[in-house]
Image 1 (tube, rainbow, N blue to C red):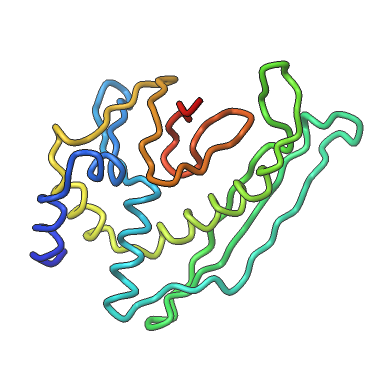
Image 2 (cartoon, rainbow, N blue to C red; image 1 turned 45 degrees about the vertical axis):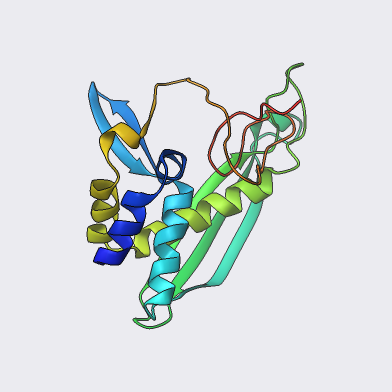
Length: 181
């Protein structure tokens, strides 16, 4: 990671750093991971360095494991991404339930297809980013600036433009809870 980028991240406020990296306890060990926002930051950096990524194929399919039980229906998505400079290609796959968990226990998830597709795209992008870039970003963000998540823990969305699922009130960008009235 270039020195100017490191300096910019170091100077960023805590909220921005938390938006780029999070920490999760896995087997009793704290593991730092890159968020969707951090991933977008690195793909933008790649593009600015002359290595833009392009989606060149995508598929979304609704699979009904039981035609009469909508709780078994799942959106499956796959996306192929290509680095325009190197021509390196990667595939991202994902799935999302057709039905959303609502307060009454039922409900069609109007964003299920979009979630599956967005996650597949994220997974394909992730494969394109050099590990050294990811490790560098994780190193630059200080441990005290990383939001620590515990299994099942909920936190407030701090995105400038929250992209929240109206049923679960969870932000699709950061995973935080929509606390707006």
